[in-house]
Image (cartoon, rainbow, N blue to C red; front, top):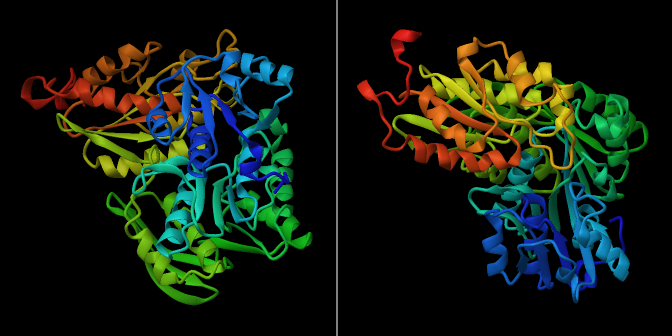
Amino acid sequence: MSTELTAEELGRVHLVGVGGVGMSGLARLLLTRGIPTSGSELKEWPHLTALKALGGTIFRTHAASNLDGVDTVVYSTAIPQDHIELVTARERGLRLMHRSEALAATMNGRRAIAVAGTHGKTTTTSMITLILQHAGLDPSFVIGGEISEIGSNAHHGSGDIFVAEADESDRSFLLYSPHVAVVTNIDADHLNTYGDLQGLEDAFVEFCSKVQPGGFVVTCADDARAMQMVVRARAAGADVVTYGTAPDADLRITEVRSSAHGVRYMAHYEGVPLGEVFLPIPGTHLGLNSAGAILTALRLGVAAETAIETLATFPGVRRRFEFKGTESGVRVYDEYAYHPVPIAKALHTLREVAGDGRLLVVFQPYRVYRTRDFQTEIAEGLALADEAVVMEVFGPGEVREPGEGGVALTAEIALPAEHKVFVPSWEDVPGEVVARVREGDVVVTMGAPPISLMGDELLAALKGREGTDGYVGRHSKAED
């Protein structure tokens, strides 16, 4: 990896902002390896209880005293450099590491599978992990979400494989030197970091060049920018294999069918039929992710039957098409999508699920720059719903200029005025949703990480709030 240090050589580790899914996963991994670990966190994230149960020390303030006895301080890109704990670490001469550097240290001595790409990283990483587990390989893993079957986002395994989600948003994925590099797709995002699409593609080509001798690259043959990357990566000597519906894909999928019950397709590897693959979660894009997981597993020597059997029971990932529950005849889902491409894919799939019911999206934009730069495209995606409730942008450390944010985004959504609304106050969202939905509808909370907490509040608000004729809110079928 990019550092010669191993996790055990980090000493006592402190993570600044330990509650988020990425940092908490690293903390869990360190604790299960027996490394003394602490963290500071102001928000009440659900992972904190589990970290304390593993022996972690959690400080509910940010203070210099939190670093007493600490050897290594770990931070993420979201933490400002003038944060009191980073300033204190520098003053005391402590080792400072970005999360990706610390994660790279935990990978040393393992065959790393690093999964990158604009969309689908978490789901693909989770599928690969489960397949390897079912194959008896007990991989270590750190994922940007919790696999529902495991209930965890990290694990220290006994096997020699380490599966990790690799973040390209801040170039930190270039710190890894994996055995396998997976690139799900390349789409316009994080241009505040890369300047333009060419800069983004250049970074993915460099990522492929980091693969260790004897390793390989896996990518999607259906993605035009990924295939441009493939040409350059192969020219530089990389071993690249592809998956998708394209005729020349190494793992080709055909007869793809998505319904409310899941995705089915026929798979062929290097021209040899593997049989039918079933994924119990709808969405053709998730079918593509599963094909990438199968191809990765096959190249690592896992039997096709094991991969296909695993995917047939894939439980999903928290915040990725996650079913939260039903109240008053209204089904509530949660979805991490915040970029226009996955927003559209998720809402198309949820339309299948809604059937004769209507679809209402509660959207919390993620990052000021992304909302500003992709405002038109995000609005087009949200217009696929019947009703849109838009919250203010979640952008830690960013400055929102006048005319930017939730108000402007709401105005651009091509829905009638009565079917879209900007709700800046978190507390007002459940009441607004209850007033708009009726029995048979589907509601999805979508976007920035905090919105994942809204689903439970919506279900609580819906419970026992049925109106006349069995309908929840103020609308009736006669109004359509």
